[in-house]
Length: 272
Image (cartoon, rainbow, N blue to C red; front, side):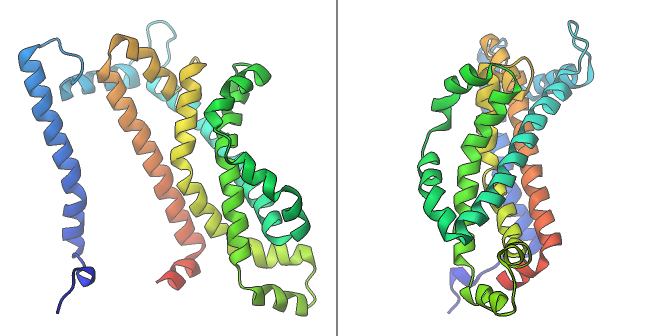
């Protein structure tokens, strides 16, 4: 008897099934937009696709009349710079502190509970404190993302280190490896692919904190632009910006996944 759990779609069928929900969403939008525009041609809530195209051309390929900048690319560069710096710091903290907590009992006893409690602090609640401490410049936005992402990376990496087979550590000690050699030659090579996977899972929260910080205090950035034009109900700008942010996040996730599979193929072979 054939069971549903054993039925696997062919490659073409899988591609079609993946595209179908997107096509359905676009169709629903087109129908809803056409009905609203038929009732009110000046409706701004669900603009036609041609309006999206005009907004993208205006923001991405025509210089702004006041600043002379190409706003879409200026905003994209500003947001990616903040996100890249914050994720880099968070990843480094996750690796160093996470491996330390997972491997060293004294460090685990000393700061393990602190990191666990710190990860429960709602990052958005401390945003006003960050603005008071660091001002309205770049530092407060980057620190917000680090506070929101780093504790989860640290806890995840620490848990992955503790899950490592004890036999590996015992063998390394039997062969005379020092603590530093166990960290650099045994633990870190085993943990790196897990760290990249953890960063992938934290991309969504990182973008959320970035957009929130830019919306409150910024002069450029994707989040800043969305909240700037919302007062004019400019959905022809907001929706393409949201789609652009989603595409950037998807490409970052895809890039990290490809990096993992190329750099650590043994992990995927073992997973099957």
